[in-house]
Image (tube, rainbow, N blue to C red; front, side, top):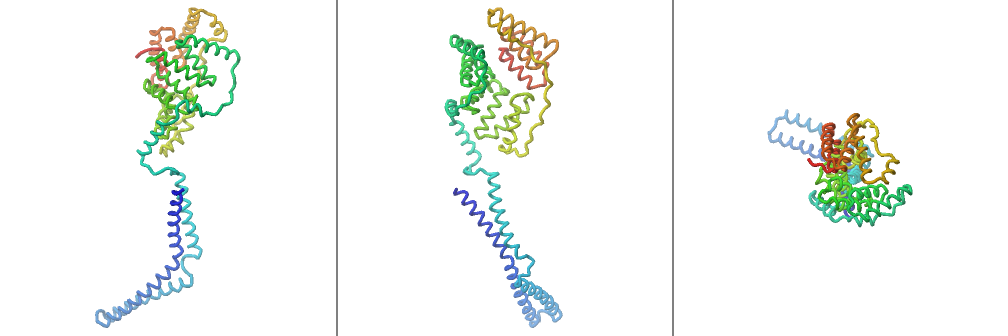
Length: 417
């Protein structure tokens, strides 16, 4: 409040000075004319004295008298007109100008400050502001605090009883088999699909523990995403640590880059958030799920970061629709539940062979290639998975988004190099 009082008082003082100057214009005009008359009369007397002393001749004296007399007549006419109010400035001009000056100085100044300034903040150097932002980031709420502060959400659409029964069976089975990597990965994804994000990230924590040093970037990125969703979109210190671990393993991981940019935006660093998201947008494929949110948020973020002339990159044309990838039918899935591990593996191998044949004969999307690499990794056929990976890298050469997906699938399949 003290700041605003001082600002308004200073602006009002400036406006008052300028307004008084405008109001005094008529009086100043008459004062100037009277002063000129006095000067010119003194000049006439000086001409007479110079003539008497013989400094100038009669001819020069006459010429000077004529010139000074002409100036006296002009100044006298101006003084009389000012006295009668007959000046070049209309009577209403002074007050109108004074009001206009007050509105521009006081109102315009406040309007500009509200648009460009930051009311309520002290004047700080950039380094001090960054230091304060960093301090606030280090002391922001933890994951548990963020979750505790969330309001109760109404229940969403519920799946069928059969699905819920399967989930209960999966949870009970994994309680007895805590080292089942694939089971915990499946549990984490399905808990997230149900909206049980806390249970989802707890299952993903178990995935990270089981994989240990072999945990890849996508494992950590999935864990961070589940933490963020459980906190209502807030990037907690725990989520930030998981994002850092993901980017350490793969600096191009798109999910981790998106949420790291969100963390910067929430933490008062729009400059870093803009740089992270703008680069991610330019390197992403058109159908990536984060593209539309980025395009919606980047213009405002650019303004906050000082990029006043920023323009969104042109939206690329969507890729042509591809035939859906073949997959197991519901009947096949139900039959698989009663199969022995050997028969189930044989069924998976048949599906893999079918996908491999289709890609070789008809081609397919990058997702199909990534799915095949991952399936071969599950089957333990790393040599064939490596060959498929190398072929995919050649097929999609030049498409960085596709190459990223292929590399991620190969990493998850346990392929090196």
